[in-house]
Image (cartoon, rainbow, N blue to C red; front, side, top):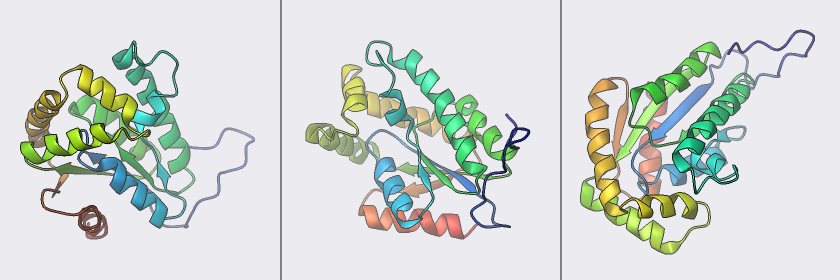
Length: 202
């Protein structure tokens, strides 16, 4: 989808002339801290869109009964929202698990068509840490994540998180440009600092 304004429409105001916007994809297993880091990043960078497909999918009626079909529709909506925001010259931070290259490439194309950078950062930890974090989050019943956590629990809970961990291990070699940030033993603020350092240092 081209990012030029429609004929006759005023061009969107750009955030900073000459500054290339970024689509920042925070990848990683459920409960690893993607949403937390994305929220902090958006709060500290005015104008950034915190775009979480897990929240978009919950806006579609009947998503619990047809989660995976509805999730595909939510991905289309998410890509359209990312495109709209990037073409204003503002960054988008997207906390979203992805284990298939085809799904990531669709967002990469959006970034390229908008003249933006696509930056993927994989937040990871060893299986014991990753599963413990998911279990703790699910037990808290956070309203922002409860719906998707319920879906994960229905499909095996921590066992599903372990499978996701394995899938990400197989996925990573296919993504040579992906930066890995180890979160085990780090407080959320330390993980945030590591993410920002990578974004600034490239």
